[in-house]
Amino acid sequence: MAPAVGPAELGGPGGWNRIHFIVDDIEAEVARLRAEGVSFRNEILTGPGGKQILAEDPSGNVVELFQPAASRA
Image (tube, rainbow, N blue to C red; front, side, top):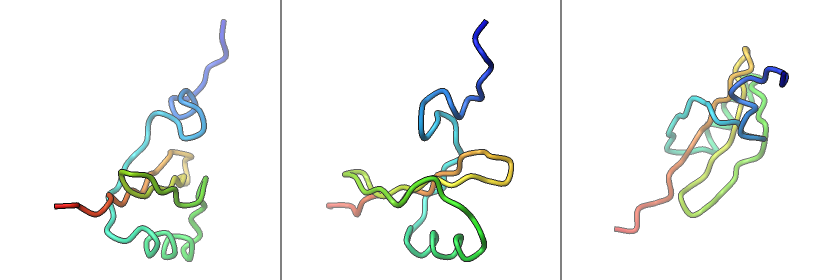
């Protein structure tokens, strides 16, 4: 029988399940949360869809902050 793993570990480094918050200024939110003692799994990543970073809550649940890319309208 395979060992039990939590849903967050099934998808690899970021996991599959997470709570997701959309923010207007990811750099400011990360600075604010770091000042409060929040630890992050990675640095801010930037891609064509926007910027993201992963943190963990005190219970080990993954929390994603996401800032969508600027609209090109």
